[in-house]
Amino acid sequence: MNTIADLVERASERYAPRVAVVDGERSLTFAEVGDRSARLANAFLELSPENGSRVAVLLKNRLEVVEVDFAIARAGKVKAPINPRLSDDERRFMIANCGAEIVVTESADVERVQALQADLPMLRHVLDVDNPSTYADLMAKASSSRPDVVIELDQPSMILHTSGTTGRPKGATTTQRARLLSAVNMLLDEFMPNENDGMVHVAPMSHGSGSKILPFFTRGARSITLSRFDPDLFFKAVTTQGGTSTFLVPTMIRMLLDAPTREDYDLSSMRNITYGGAAMPMALAEEALEAFGPILTQVYGSCEAPHPVTSLSSVDHLSSEHGHLSSAGHATNGVQLRIVDSSGEDVRPGEPGELLIRGDHLMSGYWNDEKATNEAFVDGWYRSGDVATLSPMGFVSIVGREREMLISGGFNVYPAEVEAALHRHPSISEAAVFGVPDELWGEVVIAAIVVRVGHELSQDEVTNHSREILADYKLPRRILFVDSLPKGNTGKVLKQELASRAAPTVSQ
Image 1: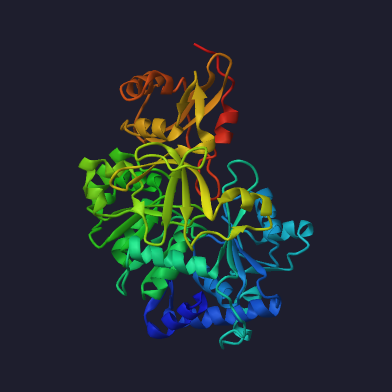
Image 2: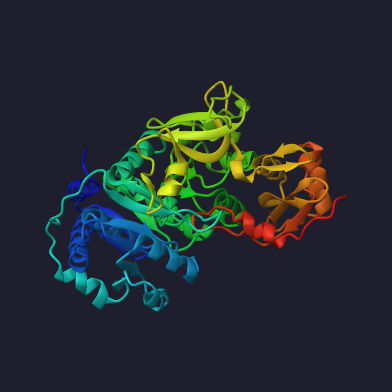
């Protein structure tokens, strides 16, 4: 099997004169990406000669993300992406956890990173991509020849930190082989780009959207980077820069649909909208299909089991009469799945159980955390912690998180089921459901809700809507109306933070 470096070099030569990356008025050809990533790889090796040393990447979506990603892979080093939205404490922890010797950042963040160096003895170099003396000049002085380094397929290639929803984040570590096989899964079960395609990166390239860089590059397709998500910027990227594909979370799709200027643009060139990171409310999926056509693909995965573990194809989206829109789709070609009960036995179709995953694209373990790694695997199967069901037709539905399940009055309540019911209300943009202690019921259901722009909603309206769909014991006892839901670095809702805002309930 070829390494990531092999694929980058091959594509750089094969598609040399074509545009590979677009960032506003800036762009790079495939040949330029090949040359610059080789030079930067050799510069990394000068700064940090040890094979497999870590390079943290703290960049917003921009052109440099692509060449830095490839340079790290070509130098045989380990990439540790960090979401720029994280606090200094979160950044400090992640850099220390992976032991990064180099941080690549930008002018807006360089002083904050440098201020952390006193607490990070391993961190020796902070490169500012906007400062020629620490980036462009360094690259220009380095050799453009292939880096002289031996790269093994089973050596670490990336450390992706989890959201830390249950404590400090853990560093899910994937090998060269795992990243390559993830790319293969994308090409087989998500979208097969060609030389005329363009991937519009609006979700953070530090996580889900960044996983698309390699498969698109190897197929001769361009990456179009947007520094922030804005519906008009997205529409312009599609109509003027050749955008044909993107990766979004459902909230972004909601914003695109609600944008008053959407009808002003011709979006017919869009061939694929992949979404993930959270469940898509069925009503929203139906609305998106009506607006954009049959171009939606849902993927499910995590830091430990990169997407697509399952895929709901564009064809599956058209089979709403079978209830497919409420599922996460089928297992992808490189993946095996089991759904088991608390004793580890397979459950019958339709019964809920923990989803176990096996495949060569899984993480090799958590960085420097053998205990957590051992707890995450059982007999070679990754324990996702997600509760799921499997239909007779092989469609996987995620019911909720195993540790998020709450027990109210002796009955099991899965937050995802309540969230799905809430999302059916046309005035609800986002909803997060969690439990808080209660003297009478043990736990009661609380819902945090973001109301759609231009809509109004009362607690009574939410309660009446929920009562039409859910059993009484599943009904939210309290509603918290919030401007936004707190989210971790991978986009997962931080329900512990929401629970801390909710004072202990009084039984009614």
